Image 1: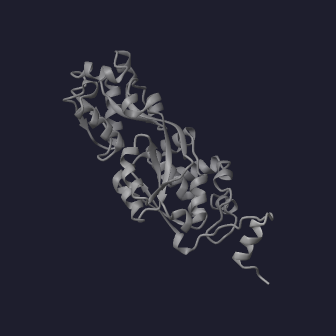
Image 2: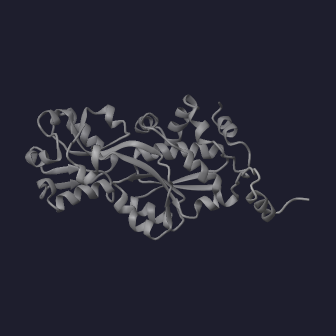
Image 3: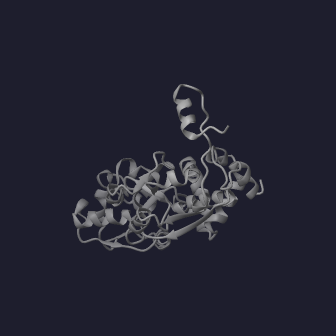
Length: 314
């Protein structure tokens, strides 16, 4: 006779050794909808997650959206996951959504040791612009401008806040909003021409090896200590792990490092599609799959690691 669930629970609570049954996802979980705010690091991690999910039989999709819209999409359950919540810089943006109780930040960071603060070309640093307090001294050389990325970005908001509050004597400066690619093109042009520029920098990112750059000291009160040292978290709807536990396990397992992300991002910046860059990296470095796919099955219930390796021709 097949035991029912209640009898199994009762048997386990009496102290018997019971193995936890593998949790499977139903067909409603097949489409996994990611948000990407247009950063190459988020494109890299989302690309790797998408390649793994495809190998497991899922259908990942990616929506490019500003940060507030991404969080709104998760709240309304139109987005299933966002792999790019940078703590602490994005915390003011996400806090109202967390208070609604409809978003969940997974406990385990997907990246630690990141940084996120203002930076300058090394040549400008050598001329004396070494800290946030030095920016105003170079107002004329900088043409009164600070360079950010896409409108609605949290880093831009922090920069605009410094201007509005006259922090570091920055009143009168103008924030130039663009995009990650647009800002980096401006920075590379300035670096080549030995032109002063202050911009939003972060790591992991290939900019750290493509550009001779230095991070500014003294911005702890705005971007946090240790040059805006950050951890990156994964955000899902509150109910998602219960509804799609197999994908939830994968998202919890997926942890990256700056070496992984820099390699994949460099390919993306060289015009590879995120999923193509991810496949190249995973074929060369398949060992990461062992950890990511621990306890993860395919959508049809087969061994996840075997299936993903087969999909990558490993």
